[in-house]
Image (cartoon, rainbow, N blue to C red):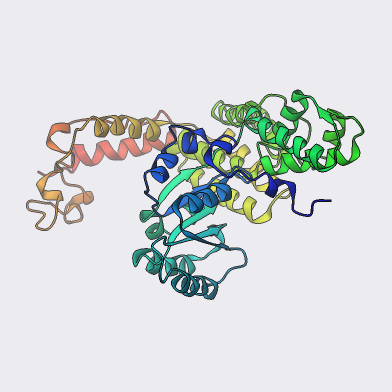
Length: 414
């Protein structure tokens, strides 16, 4: 009987065997092009579990000829990193391949531990590939981010997983000289219910193989799913639809619908996506109408991540109800996209001279004037007079508008 876990035995050996992630490692994938052209920068991979982050790191090491070392930040320490550097120096003393350090779950390294990696990245002793299931812009030190290329691994659609699950069944049939079958609809249902986690899907099929006689049925596979996953999601896009429904319900000020969709999302076990979407909603849809919304959303999502499921539902329910019943404004969202369009169009390349160092020639210090305001130009000359932000029709923004107009009307000094 095979001892090595089936998921490890089926781990892809090249980019063509990777399930999904075509935007990264498909024929025209950006990461694949970098590696095939001999460019291996420091990398940060982020995305849900079981989407191929570790596998891609293994393939990169194999293709590049670099010596691969692996650490997991949940158990590793600074001394472990230093041990790797020492070993890498000894192992590669007469080699040009270089050293690749794969650091899994980097979010568990604190700022000081992450900073310690910079020295080795900058002196060339290691090339770092760090992975995380969280948003790296929240959990990875900025100086490390600025020295790395960030790539997102997306949740797999059920159809992406089917070839791998078929290989899993073929391997098991070969191991035991058996001829068990499974319908493609069952494989799709398993993959959907596991949220696109290939590793979990393989585990379900492997367990179902042992307790099935001729055919692995949908009913048998369903019994083996973790209870938190719930019923089969027969449509690969349903999970993303639920996130969209959550946002649209909050945007539409319907707390009852919003709390329902939150419960559906959490029933799938995807805490991280729920937290991310709530943060987006607070800033995109509530925004300046209730500035504390972003603070509340951040506090509730951080509490949820600290608690974990099922208790995480409590702070998230608070956030959803507060956001759904709060006044709404997308004024900041709209302003940003309008400004972004001008920037992308090549406008505003040169800021006014009085805003640029080192002399700041002609700059007027607002705090030296009544109401801390003085009229002067801040936009580049080719954007002078451009209006991006429009005050929303809510109490908070109308109060801000009244103040904005008052200091310009009564106190402006040229």
